[in-house]
Structure formats: structure tokens, C-alpha cells
Image (tube, rainbow, N blue to C red; front, side):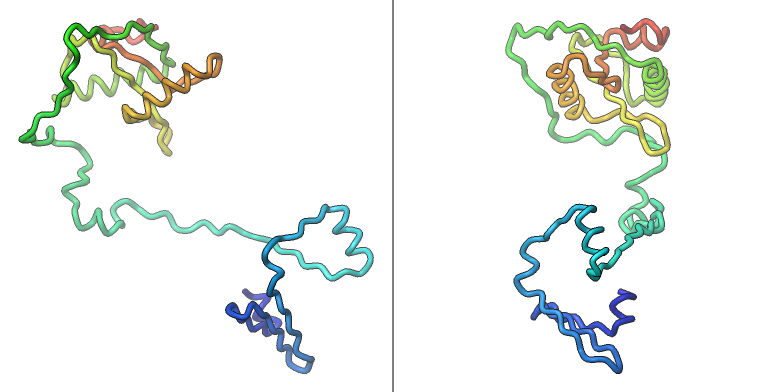
Length: 205
């Protein structure tokens, strides 16, 4: 923009014409109609050769200026409804009128699969988060034979948070289709061993 202002450029976007009206000089009119359909690329060697033969060239240097980081409390929607975004969850959500459940075919049994091995850091984080949820009453020990996927995602501050169950299934499918590829963020945890996991962090294989 500063370059255009320096050379008194007038840009007509509708007509696709640029006029350089430099005081004391003849007006230079650049008609780019039909020239913007495709861009012509040349190699660095070709560009250097053209410059050495007196061709006019322009160097553009782009600088990405980072904007100010927006704080969570500065967002209008959060400021308007602060009770929807509490720092800590006080209790479980209210019970709904309609109870959601998935009915299984009689006689259906869980698919037997070997649980995935978790990284030590993820095992430690899982133990801390499960214990915290147990103490707050958000979860309770389950004897269900059905397996549950646990996927940890690293946040910007370096901490880990559990991912959504849908993403767990996607990552599991990716792991099955890419044998030998390291997917250390995926883990499969059996609900019956939650108690054992809380007591001994290193027993899950």
C-alpha cells in the first residue's frame, strides 16, 4: 500500500486498470485485463538472467504481524453468559426427561481386543484426572465389560485433556490401518480395571 501511495497509483478494480500519476511525469497506465487468468512462474536462474539484461524487477517482502491475543473473558458471548462457562464444574448437569440408551441384540458380547499400551505420562495424567472426577462425583467405578477408549490431546499450555469418543474411534481405525506407525496418544482402557489403575499406575499394558 505504501508503494502504491508513493507512486500515486490509482487502482480501478472494476476495469482492472492501474494508473500511475506521478507529478511531473507522463501518466503510466497498466491494463491487466486478461492477464490475471493464470500466473507465469519462472525459475530463479531465469529471473537473474532477466535482471542482468536490464529487465525491471520488483521485490516483495511479506511480514506477518501477529495480532493481539484475545482473552477468553474478552469474548462478547462469554461476557454475556458467564454462568455457562464456569472455571470449575460445580455439579452434574440436570437429568433430562428422555433417557438415552442403546439397546443391544440379546446375547451380544464385547469384542475381545488387547488394550493399547499407554505412555507413562498419559498413564499418570489419566490417574490424576480419574481420581479428580471420582472425588467430585462426576464418575463412579463401573463393572461394565465394555471397553472405553481414552485419547489424550495436548493443549497449548502443554497439559493433556481427554478427547472426544468419536475422535478416539477415528484414531483407533487409523492405527489399525497403519501398523508400525506410532500413535502414542491412543489408549484403550477397560472399565473393570479403573480401580486397579488408580491404585497402581504402571500395571496397564
